[in-house]
Length: 361
Image 1 (cartoon, helix red, strand yellow):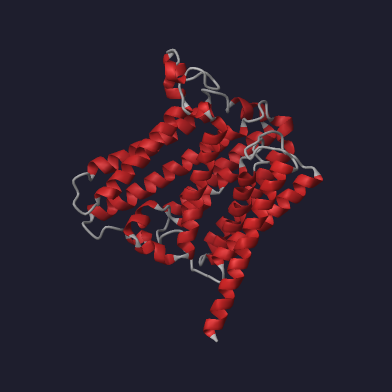
Image 2: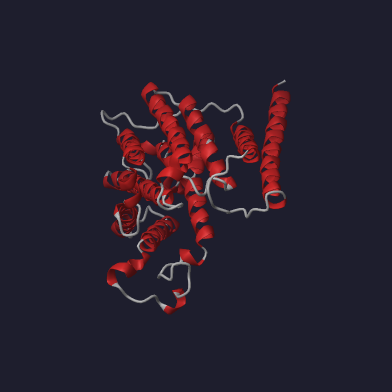
């Protein structure tokens, strides 16, 4: 009897997975053959009947794919430790507060909101500083424990790679300090979209969406999968690098900062899936207070995206300026993740205990 139920569940999961995939294939086919749009085409959000139906298909497809993965799993989730003032909750609430401030600026001080996102202004510099800070935190950790025999070489190498990646992202954000130092564009970079010393302007749309998609997978999807499949936590390597679930909650906030990219399939898919993942995390949560905070995050994500889509055309001075805020929240997640990894592992080695802390359990 149990084998029959298991077999039935597997068949249902396979059906839902195939249905979800077919939904995305159908949308892609319509984009190419009916609307004749590129997969990464940007512009003003389209709210025509056809595109609203398209959004519904994307939403339903996301639900089917996630249900196929979740099945009947009901893991028990605890985001924070048992401290009087959990750092995890402080990070979530602090990020929510920053997001609310940005939203209030958008609603009541639109000029300030727009001017702050210009090149070499507050948002761009904060984005770069957070990326540099993330790089420095990981680099210091690697240097501090470079000779520690209990840390595998592969772990050290991966941390160095992340540190280098965050550094490059920070340098790209400020065009390798070209505008500050006033040096001419290096020959190999001459002729890119902004004629500046940076890599992403050679193919801005592709780099940009790779950046958004990659960070969403790493900081939201992977932690959610670890919640669902606890066996993944048995791998020491994965337990080191996959962000803890509370970071997944924070990682959903950048998914609400879309306007000119809203028509892109995977942008809508990441937004819808972030809402469903937050709902699932709330259901799995064992603590009432954590459940309320996750639901608050989900509501804020919905309201933020809705307001940007409804009022963006009236407020934005530049069509793409909301991306500057999106690219601020992503490095903020970098910084929290880097500090989290470094802090926990420092505690472990300082105490001369096992390789991984209880907080990862």
